[in-house]
Length: 305
Image (cartoon, rainbow, N blue to C red; front, side):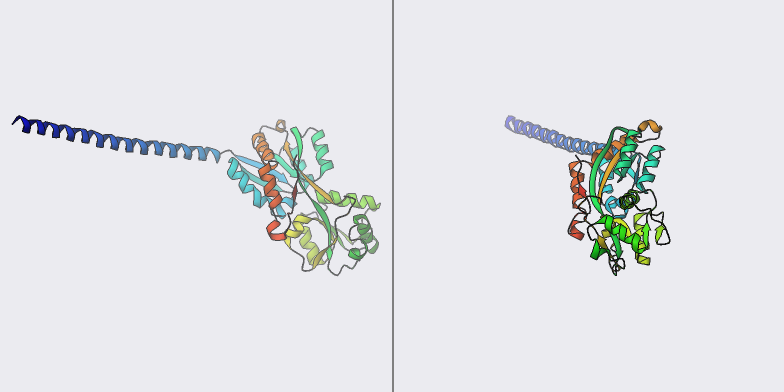
């Protein structure tokens, strides 16, 4: 009888132990699930915070937009930083005026002399201007090339512009105070020519629009290479002058954070994030890869220091 009682006690103890173990296991699983839920919730809150850093106003030359570069790289910046970017695509001169007036947070432009003056006038923050990338300008004209520039001056921009003036071949100028317009004016100055007359058309428009006008009227115009390639208007137009060894067609781009003392609305933190991001090694690689798959060569060459 004692033996039977002892066996029953042992069995009862074993059942109790199993019940506790099972309960402990369930509690452990519940704790794990609760911890995972809290972790997920924390990550979600963090993601929401990253997406709520506000809007950044980027004033930039039309070529960075018309070339397709910004459409390629800006989503990477927005995802990595949580800032959303409003792009105002105008000529470099107009972009810098926006900076002077405190209407933009950061500038991406291509008029080095004007950029230097902008910084020296105190319109930039303490870090001033930084190099980002470069490409070159090309003189575009109809494939028939009635001025004969491709035959006479395929690599001499000053001579090409002299021929345009001598033959009064229709030339469409940006005439918008952009970096391209400033470059064009500098070449005319080298020629000692002030262009005037019916043959010289002042469009007051962006690069893409001017190239479309040249295509429709079979006229000549000066373009950055990236926009020319991206618009693919080579059925009726062609490059008639490029790669001038003097370097006059060189096209450098820079990034500038606007002086936050302009007004309380300047998003200087966002501007700084953009400036640091676009000159970073990772972004410079993205810039250097853009266009390679489609054109066999990059549309821009990164050169941030």
